[in-house]
Length: 352
Image (cartoon, rainbow, N blue to C red; front, side, top):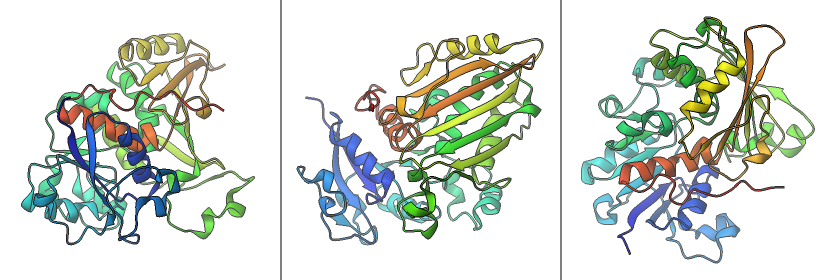
């Protein structure tokens, strides 16, 4: 049997941390050697997440005090709060510079550290590391990801929007000034920390927009769309909170360029993703549902014609905890360590 990679999950008591453990538990090429959780340090993982009771895991530890050289990780997943990962990675690499990192926070997604300070309200603590970070949308950056020591895993909303839009922007197939992204996320996208606004009685039987006109993911979207288009792109993006546990549904409105219609756009996307294992194009006119991809690393994309000539409606669906976070992180780990990209993340969606 091939030697297993020694991996750690920093921030294992959150939703994305637990999802990483779930996926890595059955990954044939990975062995979990370290789990951290600041408030739950000293506990067994089963005491935090009872679903892991039948399995043996290392006890949860606090990040401070870990001897990184001694633990000998090949790769660490950082599922830590924004602003925390920067200092943790700096300390880790002082003694274990060979350890590769997949960061699930926003700390290394923005190339412009001044933009990071503006959108996240604090200066970047590791600008010298930002320069080597690779943006981790695997389908579009895998060549750089394979050579990277630090990969910035994309946000869940940006993944749902970028997968359908980047091929169209690269092909100059849509008008860049008329992109509207209307996206909905399940409750787990807000994290596991206790918040009054996230109580069941506060969100059940309701539906609301938030971060209207100023959501942090706008900076990430503008950065990657501008890169794809070769010119500055600023999109209209509005997120919504839906009373469900998992899932993101992005409904995207675009206008074809130079006479391209909705079927043309569908053809561009179909060709772009024909060989991609985790992006599935539905037949023209069909649109996906979040329940069709729940628990999987898949993104389903559908394209339909608008009644207005030249306009198209694109709908993408993914699981925010898998392809929107932990599944994509494992996909990036596979690329970074030279494993087949689909290893450990080929699960079919759970239904019902």
